[in-house]
Length: 94
Image 1 (cartoon, one colour):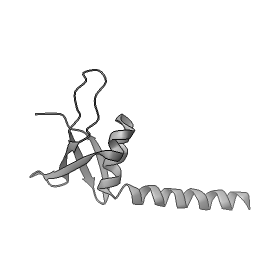
Image 2 (tube, rainbow, N blue to C red):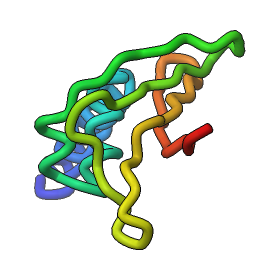
Image 3 (cartoon, rainbow, N blue to C red):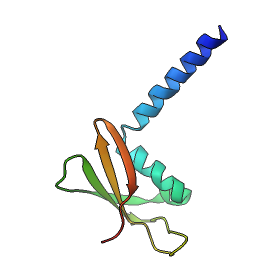
Image 4 (cartoon, one colour):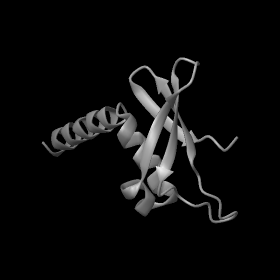
């Protein structure tokens, strides 16, 4: 009985995580949250499509997180599309 409940909870949790990973907005804010929770909540950004299919650039226009080591804003991020799933990482400037 307990095993069945645990299995059901794990399946529901896995489905919810996969659904969240299909959202560009959620994944972008979740990744920025690692660097700065305040920025993730208050930031504004614009999307730039690049010619490579399966990738988008997102540029934070307001409240970008600040890197502690260099005190530079982290403005440009890249979103990778693997089917319906999205993965985000800092792209860099330039």
